[in-house]
Length: 194
Length: 395
Image (cartoon, rainbow over all chains, first blue to last red; front, side, top):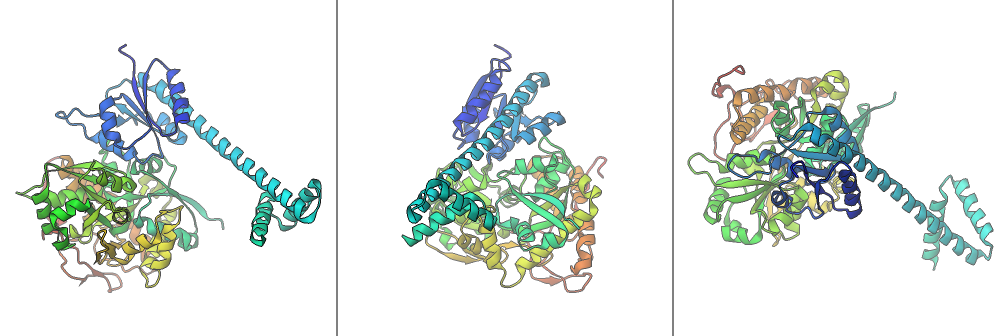
């Protein structure tokens, strides 16, 4: 089909890549390729010859893409891409979301815009999910530490679970520290005394 | 009074040191700034976050400021260089086998002509040279060195992110690299490369990174802009003072800055460069310079050299580039910022580039300023007054 876009997503993380692809497919029947291993990125892109490349702002290989946008000479068959900066609002939103888009020269804006909008939304979603996941992981870690400290206290002092927990809490409050910090300190101290 | 928040992007390189020190040793706070440093993995993102307002200032390869202001490379944004953050500081290296073929051990480590000849002798086809960015001093200095009139050396620049330079040369994706420290020394440490030449062998006093801001921001916030220039100037002075290299090195080594062992960083800051896997050490004076010889001064003649070099590399007319370059190296803001705190300011803002073989006294506000040496590998002198006139409105 003539208006199928060839889109490349440069993304190491499989889950993130899948989420982005999902979002892009909602905007049309595009031909989406994920490049997970970005070594030799220029070569890989030349082989695919994409219309649009989406890449995380934090990816160091953005500079490789920048160079490709300049390497357009009529003799070589270039991966002639340029960053579409004509639409300031979209550019700003993209940077907020942490995505950068390289679009082949001459592509109509109305064809690109839905793709960019979807990509921006998905990058936002990915970032939010990631920070939530990090928070959940941290909370889980803290709970494990507190549980372990509680167990050690129960054994060392021959007290019950509730009493051990109350002791940890009280100490944390007295010292103006977090429960998890006191628990971690206790674990370290008891390990040293072993 | 509360401090003014200023967000500044940096790319993990030794020459981010003045920004790191300005924050960590407290010069920024003393100037009333709450300086937050953000590490960026690419110059493209550094540029985007500056241009689109997430950062107020950025550590930037000097030619980018001129290129962006002139609208080369897809994006036009009026940027200013408020001061020079570093002079020199990049290394050229090859795979150890190629260094052996070239007989690198017998070539002078600062002899650009000899190394150039050895390269020409041993090159098989067009040399692929890794650089960090198309509009970088790396690219412009390589062009100056290798495109010698009458005997150019065929080459092609390939952009490779600095931390990947060692892998790229080891895998054969590139034949040579030219990269900002510590990534050249890191490649040696990993056994991936031998160093052939510091870029200062091409130009002994080449501006490398600048403190870049948006022009509209500098105009709307002149006091903050000046405070920022003062903070990094004082930081650069502090780094240059005897005995502070150790602390500067440890700060840069922190994970939130470079995350590279202090032992490697110290080689660069002290100018004792380990050039190959056998541990050969070369003493390089000013392997990177932050302060001495008016290193921080944004000379308009340096900007003009960059404009000429960009014109040669891109084939664009030099006239408009000259005008842009001259106006975006803001020696006026620099003077206003650091004159009152004891900086010895040069009498002029343009000078001959490459004319000084030795350290030479020049006219200055306090009368103690010594410049140079600053010569080019081919001995030519760049005289801004001598630039060939160009046709068109820029004239």
